[in-house]
Amino acid sequence: MKPGGSTVRTVLKSDWHATANGWVYEIEANAFLYHMVRRSVYLQVQVAREKMSLATLILGINEQSAMKPGLAPARGLNLWQVNLPSKKQVEMEQQLLNDDVA
Image (cartoon, rainbow, N blue to C red; front, top):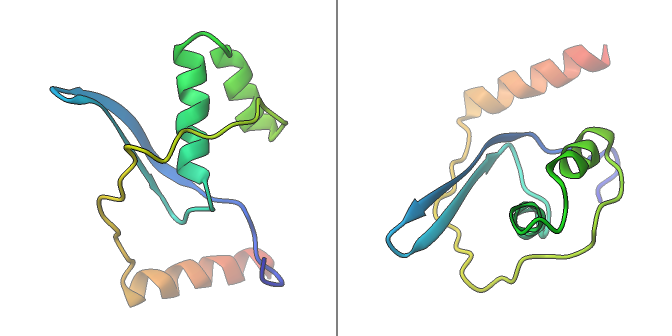
């Protein structure tokens, strides 16, 4: 990680929906970490299969506590779209970060 960097990411959208060919998971975030999506899918599938309670998942997220290790297989996961912020959005976010530090 870069000096001053952070592993904190903000998930803006996380949805599952059924299609004729199976389930589709969509996730949108301000940035992604290595294996972040595979980890998210794995944990949600564990809850759906009743191998982990929803309460445990929520507690793990809110308290940033250790949870069951594992990743969803990469098979079937596809990057669909990348949305890059405009220069104006980047400047506004940087200004908010600077205001928080000050």
